[in-house]
Image 1: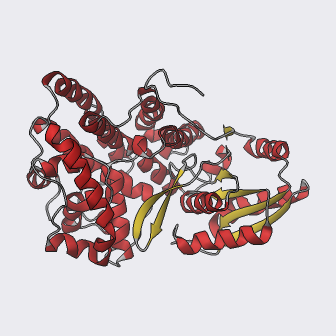
Image 2 (image 1 turned 135 degrees about the horizontal axis):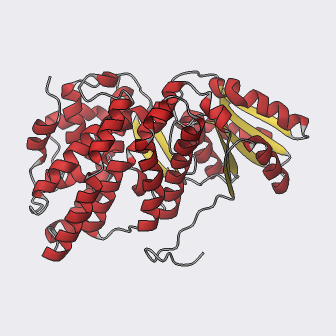
Image 3 (image 1 turned 45 degrees about the vertical axis):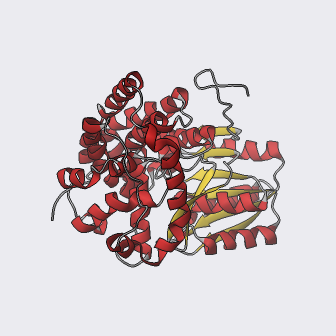
Length: 431
C-alpha cells in the first residue's frame, strides 16, 4: 500500500467493500457470490433477528446458500464475554461455514469479530442500527471477569448497511450512535496530547476521516434525531469511518480517549452490581461532557511538570471502587510506570514544541461548546444521576478511570501534575 504522505506509516485496511445505501442487501448477495461462500453462519440476537436476520436468512437460503443460525435469545443484557464467544465458536465448529455474517450492532459484532479471529475465518458485518463505531474495527471490545478489555481481532471483509433498516431501529439507538461518535471530539484531544507527550504515531489524514463526519453530526443532530435518512446515513458512515481509522492506525487511539475509559469504568461498576448496565454509546456521550470540561481546563496549566506517576500507590478509596478487579489491573499500572519513567521527566516539551502543541489542543477544544450544545439537543444531561451515576461515582470515574488503560490521556497529565483533584471540584456537578 505504501507509506502515507501525511505520517509516513503504512496503513492497512482489510475491508473489501463498504456499502451504506439502499440496495445494500442485493450488493451483499453479489459479494457473497463473488467470494463463493455457499455455507454461511449467521450470528444474531432476538432483536436483530426480528429487524433483519430472519428475512436475510430466508433470502440467502432461497438464493442457494446453506444458512446456519447462532441466535442469542437475549433481548437485553447480552455481553461480549467469554460465554458468548464460546457459543459462536461452537456454532462455527458445527456448521463449518465458508464465512460468517454478524447481523446486529455492538455486542453481536464484537463477539463475532473476536470468535472468527480466533478461528481464522472471515466475516461480514450487516449493521441493524447506527448505534456504535465498531463495525469496521480490527479490535474487539470484550468484557472478561467484569473488566472491559480491547483485544486484537480482525476487521470484517465487508460491511453492508441498508438505511431503511437503520432508520427503523429504536430511536434511542440512534442517540447511542450519536454519543459514540461525538466522543471522538475528546478522543481527538487525548490523541494530540499523547503525540505531543511521547511522539506516539499520529496521522492528520486519519484524524480527518473521523473529524469530517463528527462535524457533520454535531451540526445536523436535529435532523438525525428526527429520523432523517440522509442524516442517519451520515452518522453510520461516520461510525464506520471511525472503525476504519482505528484499523489504519492498528489501535483504537483515533476514536477512544478518557471518555471511553469512563464508560469502561461504569461497565466495571455495573458488573460489580453498583449500578445497572447502560448502552456504551450513551455512556460515552455522557462522559464526553465532563471530559471536554477537564480538557479545556487542562490548557491553563499545560506547561506544569509531571511530578508523580498516576496510580502507583492505590489507596483505600481507589481499591474500594475496583474491588477484586483491582488485582487484575497490575499490568496496566506497570505499563504506566514504564511510560512515565520514559517520558515524564521530559515534560513540558521545549518552548516552541509546547507552543505548537498548545495551539493544536486549543483548536481541538474550540469545538467543545458546539459539542456541549449537541449533547443538550440529544437530551444527554450535564448533571449527576444520569445512568445511575451519582455525584460520588462521577468523581470516582474521572479520578480512577485512567487505571483501566495504560494509554496516556488528560487524566494522567492532570494527576501527574497534581491538578486533577482541584479541577474535578471545579468542573463536576456536586451532590
